[in-house]
Length: 378
Image (tube, rainbow, N blue to C red):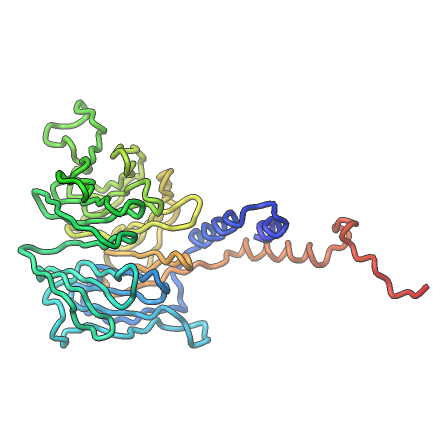
């Protein structure tokens, strides 16, 4: 790390290279933090979490009990050990609470004064954060498995459909008019909401080679329910997960299956699976709930980098905090766990040796930089 700092100070390296290197190191050192707890509020499993991007301070969670909680992630106590407190809760006693399981919660991308929730009670609610009352309620004919607000668009509309339940929807972080949807009918569709026809293409795991697919499997992304979607941070690729225990990486512009093999990614969830990707790292990583753990893969090689274990039951959601390279995960054990970067012993020793050499070993210093000053008046 000192090498990166020295090169940056001397103008030999782009500052972005140092940032990427440190972000990558932090992700690779993620571990369950014994000094940080998150208030346990939910009485049933946690289906969804979201961290706002304005301050990176507040986190939403929604549970199978219909409860919504807002947490403050900042530590103002000055102590190493602290608990992320629930600052407000839409609990069972609130007359506006969802009647059934909350499947998705999301902050409004431009203002923490508003967030949106959707539920199996067939409603989607737009909430005023200050009053904890819904400013708008939309009612639907069926269960709402997922919703998503575009992180970049300010105005858009959407009309899309599938023959079966739409389990996950995601807007592109690159183009405000591009939307991807995943369905229980094994299909993933990419839509341009500006077009009358809407659908640009349907992802095909066989890339159009019908000789490799049974007639009923043509234009399917997975051999089972597709319950997870996530764009890479740059929007160039799309990751999907399905109940066939596979994760696939697609070119988001062409719909081509990259055929990258991640191995078996256990997934038996009949609902949406919320997974996430890192930001600012090189290489980039994807964090995927896998039974009672979170599997971390290198996105573009398929390598299983590590497995984060700490939950006592299945993990249903995880969210990456890009400001601090932290990860939060929620599951059926009613817990939200914080995975925090730590310095490994080898890193500490290396930095200590580098510091000692720089400060104490004068014989190794270039003579041009040695101190030639003397107090001898002669």
